[in-house]
Length: 152
Image 1 (cartoon, one colour):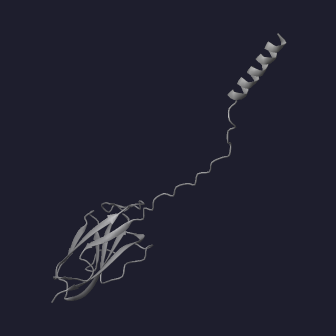
Image 2 (cartoon, rainbow, N blue to C red):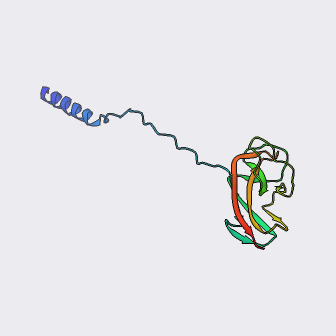
């Protein structure tokens, strides 16, 4: 009987040893955060193209990325604005409101993406497009520039 008990104890010990789980690795896993995609607002002058030759009436077509183009509403809402054009003139600083519409400064506060300059004089011209908030303050560094020539 001693042999049976001893054999049973050995069998039980072996069986228990087989059922023991492998040691668990408790080393913490560190996952680096994934950076958010860059969503900088952008304005693009689609036409006229750089160095185009045009007639005296020039239609400017605009596009944008990462910004909602809306009607001017006097509000400063991040990511929402409207187009402004500067013809042969330097834009206002990013911290100052864009002045009222003149023959060289145009507010497209309707939410549209086109504007036609009529009767431009022959020669070289430059258009700078700016996106401004609803309160007409420019979005920082959101500009595009095109140089073109009006044919005589």
